[in-house]
Length: 164
Image 1 (tube, one colour):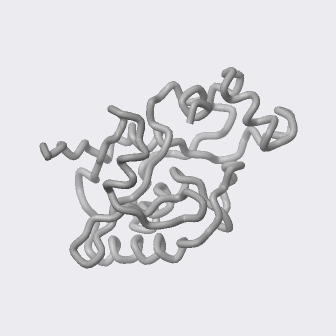
Image 2 (cartoon, helix red, strand yellow; image 1 turned 45 degrees about the vertical axis):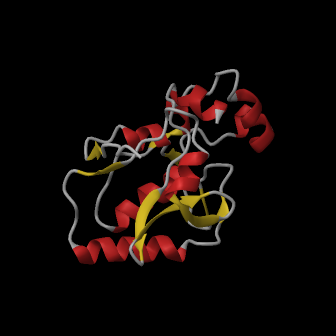
């Protein structure tokens, strides 16, 4: 999480997609492995003060939503992609969210490239070395989306918090 914060200068380090199942709100998320969890469990793992819920300003039609939800559920059990590669055999959190929305015909943001983030941040350098061997082996032009990129999408609005 510190590396994501350092690379993006944002408090957002994880994300998921809220889906409704049998009248319950659940979160589809890319952890190890891609899974579904309760909103309460998802929020409990958040750093205090950083949990946000967002929704589209304009929802796609019901068929597009079902298509996206079905695609997302097909990803259940996939391994977490700790190298943040833009493929479909493994997924990282913001890639999963981006691709679920994309299945509904919604492009939340343009993917960036690794080189667009602060790769020289002290919390980022050791992660790059651990996962790639060295900074020269990092595919700097690899498409990537971070939780902060999704959170900044002009297509999304904050969902107000209800008092418990």
